[in-house]
Length: 302
Image (tube, rainbow, N blue to C red; front, side):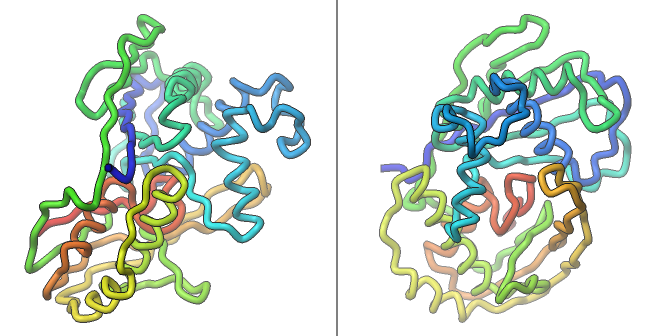
């Protein structure tokens, strides 16, 4: 049985009224998505606090955003049911914006909300400048056109995929890992600025268990064996740097620092089946903190 069912939607905002600079678009898109989702589904015009609302348990916004925050406040590890994939650190301003969202659990089952909200985002405008898109196209991972704002309706149901560690066929003796968007790993509350292979595997095991426990069907893993074998993998080269990013939190009404590692690392050694399977898992579901902003996207090269 597959451990995770997921749906990837590819969104295209065409013909933006003003060009946007794509540096750290994850914060812009996620912030706008949360705002427009609440504005779309909340019958109280977003003035009421969610934790005091009598219909919160049936509210899609609450289940996607607020329950996660409440569990985190209680000390639980609670991954969001969506992951953003956004362009990062491009050189030129864009008049067409392409990004993707990966949906899990109830977010997958209620994918129509995401399509509606992206449509509302395009009409209402991005950022404080309210940059609007004249047309929105949404496709699934198989390039089937699901929605076109010109028609304003769903054209077909998207096709989802399933992931299983046991289906992995990726093999390598040497491995390059490219950190496409900032990787945020922490040890004893301090950022890890040059992770070794063991650190990556520990983070991947945590990510895998959290996601499959909440949104899938976890399989039993010999975590001690997987971690112990990762200690023998050598770092051949490490060309990474920690970049400083910040975003404004309307919830906390202050700027937050959300930097991370970008660059690449090379490793060599006796990679186990599960080392490579977990890394392929990370290519889809990312690694580290704040993946709902698009962080932690990696690309493997064997």
